[in-house]
Length: 384
Image 1 (cartoon, rainbow, N blue to C red):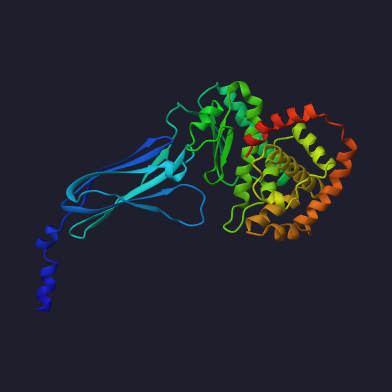
Image 2 (cartoon, helix red, strand yellow):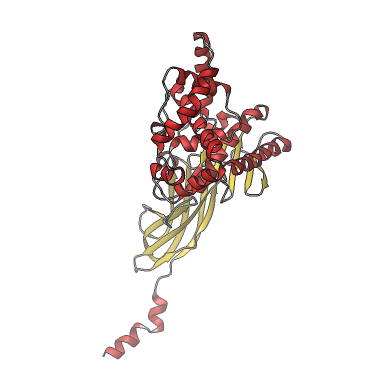
């Protein structure tokens, strides 16, 4: 009896009677920047009862994970379904983000089909993009001539060379830079834009987006150097345990732009004279939303980084970044590399810069202070 049962279960007639799940079409539709719609048409000999969309987003990560979404539909032998990735709920994705998606389908007979992954790029298709590449950097732009794009590429390459010369830091993965024609165009590419946003580095995606008009090239070159530094430093120090102190990340970005803005120097002088400096430990947290305090935070961060590189050299800074890459704590990294913690760094830095800066200090009238604050507000808040 057992033998007859086994033979019957494997008989060709019963195998042929099993239902077959077939995918008629599978696609994804980009509506940048608000949503991404996934569409599926499938059929079976019996009712389809369970459909799930699985997807991954290409970004730097420590684990291979995917997202799974249950698709709501009425069971039937033939179905057409859609599922929307709503960026209002996720916070959005940068232009050029790559996603891979696939479907898992089940029917009433218990059959299961997992489709082959498909790739979709979440491109900002509102514009006709052109691109130029050099080494590991690709610049995308849609307004301005080739000379404009080539100047920005030259700026990026020079910033990379300068950063490696001063710190030893370098790109470990290719990056993309999207040049929008204005800050308004850039903000239109974001789900929750802030009115002063002029540029942003999506570090986990190796993507930069900046609003640079062809007639505002000087500011654009500074912004590219700043945001590019954030990407490089992130790639050099990425680890699952700890991030850089804010002052070090921002200080390196400002340092790599070139000589400090005169307004930074003036504000730092005032803070020293008035005994209003912010401690290095306090600068390890996110900067204040108040413009004066935020700008002072950038100015101090630049000065501390300048002190470290000038006093201890490039090799020590590279060692520090590599130590953070290993997941070290803030004080642990500085103690290992320099032999002191951040409190001692603050003391040493003040001893170095305070006498020099105070000696150079000139009286500043109140009207100048008012103008200074207005000028710094836009400058500081554009950086980040």
